[in-house]
Amino acid sequence: MITTKSKQDDYLTEFTDGDHVGQCDAPVGKGGRDAAFTPFALLEASLAGCLNITLRAFAKSHDIELGHVETTVTLVPGESGTTFEYSVELPEGVSEKDTKRLLAALKGCPIHGLLGKPVTFELKA
Image 1 (spheres, rainbow, N blue to C red):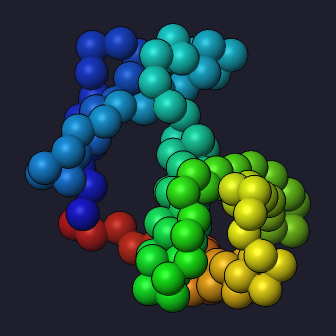
Image 2: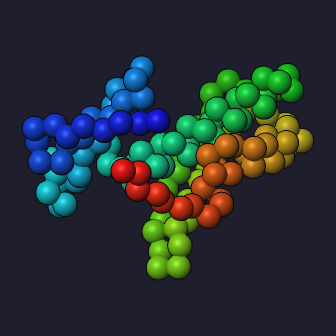
C-alpha cells in the first residue's frame, strides 16, 4: 500500500509505503515544478524495475552469468489503450540460447502480468 501527502508546492507529492519515501510532481507545462518523477514516469519505473529484477532472478536461478542489465520502458498512451514499449540490454558474452531464455522469462515479471490484465478502480470511503 502506498500513501501520498501533498507538499507545499502546488503539485509536489510525497509517497511512502511505510519504509521508503519518494516524491512525484507534475511537469512545468502542467503547473508543477518538475521537481520529481511524474506519475507516468513512476509507472514506467515500476515495469522497468520489475523486468530488470525478473531477468536477474532468472539468471541467478539458472546459473547464467549476467552482470549489468539495462531495461528501458516508455509508456505510450493511445485512444484505444496504453502501450508499454520496452527494451533490454544484456551484456556481451551472453549466449544466444541464454538470451532467448532470458527474454522468455520476462513474461514472468509480476508487473508485466498485472498490467496485461483488465484493471478496475474502486473508491473506498
